[in-house]
Image 1 (cartoon, rainbow, N blue to C red):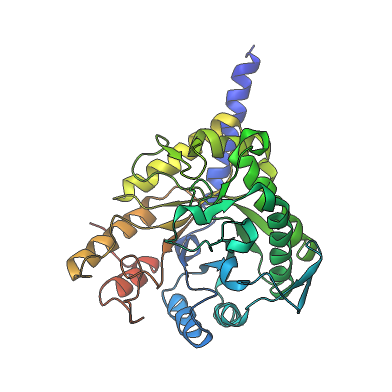
Image 2: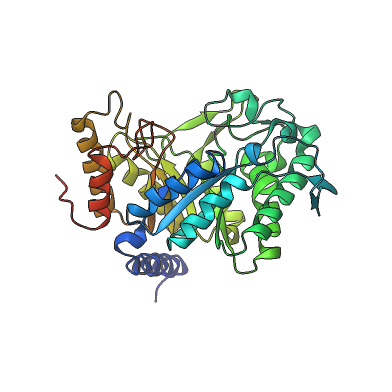
Length: 373
């Protein structure tokens, strides 16, 4: 007679095998994607071009970050009534329209990422955009309900405008203070609980009220490159410390598992081993909790990318690491970061022309015609 503890272990292993077995259903281009970081800000004409260049790589998935601060830079508005905030909003959709309709016409599956609040929403006084200082990530207690209500409206109107988009990811590296830094006292003494209260719960409620079968997930945790689970982040605004596995992933999977049908992480390690180390740390946690589910690496790249200089040697190095990552990945889906907008990591040069070796090598990798070293 087996003990209850042994039966629980067997059940966890069977659940893990079920998830792993499901991964084999996605193969080749269907497992690969590209992050289009200019989704709602590069200009409509340029976004049409960029969307075509993404589709030309052969991938079937596009990860499209939508910067709330760019979509709604001002609190004043007169066009879109917000059902939760009880006021009108003005949103800038033109650039995103060009991105979405071009990708859809090319048969690419779109994943929206809702992220990066305007300064007026959190009370920080400055917008959250990549590279902004950490005080911009502050969400003050005086603004938390305002933040929550306006984020609901933002998600609601996005879903209303793009009801054919099925996949929605919420937040961006919320365990980093420059993106998400709620002021204490924290709900349940946990920034992960604040993420749920301020971002995930209102966004999912809004999106599924319009698209009932939408797949909403997250949380896009920063994963401490090359170190797996062994790192702690200190919030420089308020002083609290968190570990991405113990204080974020564990709490979210234990208390709100239904909100994460897919669990997402970015990673920028020095090599492909670092990416796998982070994924394995997360997977081991899932199995130990009896909460296995698909994992997506929604951003990945390596070291300094092709910088400095974008030499062919550096492009070959990155191509080989991408090839090895895709060849050996045991998780469901991985999105290369990015198409454009960051010369070091992108498939395109700063002038939007394809990098002379890397872009064609990436096409060959997706097609299964590139030999890893």
